[in-house]
Image 1 (cartoon, one colour):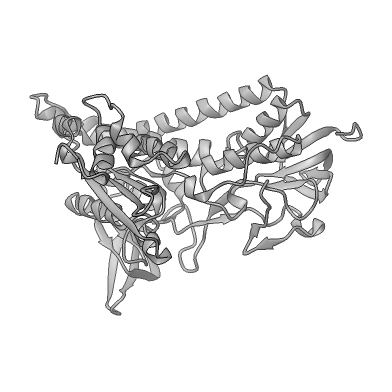
Image 2 (image 1 turned 60 degrees about the vertical axis):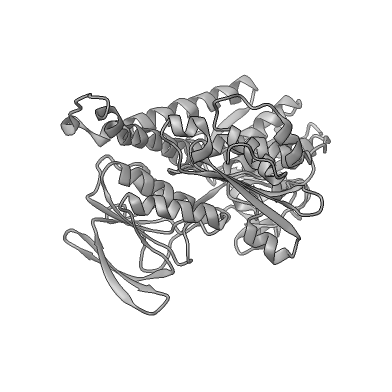
Length: 464
């Protein structure tokens, strides 16, 4: 790097992509600045991953009350105050945001408050006033909730995910548009606290990107809990009323119905924050709003990189963080990390039952025409799952019929989001089911289901 610039690298955005890129670059000896218009940590820490998981934790504590009452405890729910649940989630977010700010300071990263806009391949204007110069620029501006016509957010009746995370009072009923990860997680939270929930999804099943068996288990679980699911259904229009809204729905057969709800939560995807940041000035190539990048997150303009939700990789915090590392190391001349392999990205949904996966679904394998086999081992045959009352679930392996290499792995049930990493490690390192089957797994643990699924693939499962 030359000394003609204030910094070696300037990062626009301090989300899980931006702050990781900044810290990694600083570790490699670079002079780094981060420009952030809001709170350190971006959407994930402040109005996304972290506060939502705090809400989920509180929801699951609330759902455990009947189990405690079964032990003879008398619990008075009259004093329940949802605003306390919100406060706990905000406390977690604030603590982690401050923690990241500390890490940036510890690594001598300069934090500049304001909105960054590209002026040239070496210049970023902050708040349209001052100019920051750097040898290289990493764009990490993230995304925002997608708006659909007729269901524009008003933060009162029609809510975004941000609005829902910041509610201090529960509605009597909620209609959720979109049954992706965010939609089903909010359905889990709200239903746990007694809110009447409707989910509307245009596809034929919830979590349409997950394996069908996982989606089916979630559908059955939600149905038992009284969550109304309107699948293969689209929302045509919304009329606000004194008590909330009336939403007109139409299913695949053309049948229409109107559903009333006090609140409507619209979570039908996210929009990349690539508008208004100066991409046109530099001629940076985009496709449908996403920045086009190479193997090391570089744009078509030398020295300018893009990571996270603004590029066409899965919109996940852990993907953004890895891309931040890749970009920082490439700028520093250490290109040890290869392009992200999307087949090795774990996907996790934190509803109940939890859903986790890596690799291909069975439908995807079928479309590719691979000769394959699939096995599933049920939680109900796992000692700890039965002992803890969490026996609804399974571990599913999809593997090559010829080589037995794992093509996809899917877990639905308790602790799935933690357990998936054993199978990710196996897939990444070409560890075969026979190797997992031979490993001694501690007893009693839920992870025994992984061992037994691997044994089932080899034809010798013990406990089924």
